[in-house]
Length: 595
Image (cartoon, rainbow, N blue to C red):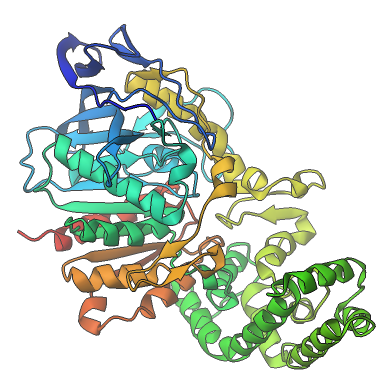
């Protein structure tokens, strides 16, 4: 194994006058061996950063370029520095370099570190770059788009962001290893970091390096995660605590804490109702306030609807485990062959009863499990129709069984049926977005045909290069992809909980335990939950239920704030929502900083 040397870095301080109140302050290059070429007041990084599972680099240079800029919002004026480049993280076991992590930092000038918060920001996926938060969230500049509509190609431009949180905190946007230009350092490979715990540890490594290099150990510290980033945050904040680094607060945007309840119909129903109301498929006579209406849906969902669905779900899981997750691998193989030819569950039982004693025994268990399943009662189906605008007969059919078809799958059923008469399909990410249904497009992976993703991918992809290259002066020949699909396919969801218990499967991952441990051990840690009412991917009400069910005493639960907005998964792309979030977050930061 080759010995890896962490080569010392020197800073060349160059003062160059530029347009638009911009000054190139610093370029970090390797004094002996550098892959960076300085040209026209910018830095070209010639290292090729790969995103494939076995990719790695040999370069251990902490290359970066720092630019001085100014921000103005009304009477508020702020001079700040942007730094874009890499930090080299160290293996916690032997302090050898193990990855180069790409980041973009916005830091206010001449602010005392003890009083100036620093916020570490990341997106989800797993496998997504920080593109959406960097270019559509709370940074000093954002891309001008036609959201929620499709942004016409070409003519893209950046604009000042009146809702930037730079007024309140420094902002550090981090890209996970295998995304953007973050890559493992040999002999490590990208795949070594592709797992729930491995990923969280890599972020610990980055944060420790950032705090050390920039002398920010005495600053108030915050995390801000989006989507899978909200899974990362509880693991990360607990890992940080174990490393002697306590944080002031966590902002959790579009939260998922419990994969066991990810598609829980009880948590989904209010979001479906919000969508139906948006398209005027239901009427609310007693109030014009969507949130007042949703409170009624939440109450119905957690009580009358849950009285049927809780038992139904438990029985269905038992049935599903018998058929698709048999611990006897030989029996499961035989079962799989019969599933291919069976017309329905009862036909499957008949086929099994004609076979071996083990298959006959399994057939009897399946028959018993089926007998416990019941069709949704009319009184409940009628109320569901009232709340989501789908015919009660169609809803009842969702509680019947067809072999190889997931029952009660309103997650897939509602987006294609709510606007069926208009031949439209609504977005999983933001139900206010829709597109015309098409037999070809409908069969494309949802990440690439979902209306919200379709309306935003091109403009944000272009904005990345516009911002990183033209605005922040960093160029690279490395390929850039917003979402690493290789990473998604290979992600290891195994996790060791604070209690020492282990889980292996995505469907069993529950990071509420990590969050509860962190909140208990750090009594000053604050938690800000931000949910979008039109988000089907991470339903706001399921996050609310998960937070309310955390095993915490009331004094600790008081540190949790729940905020829901009239938006979707990428809620900050909605200008009204972003403005409201900024005000709410400024108050949150004030409460979380102890002076």
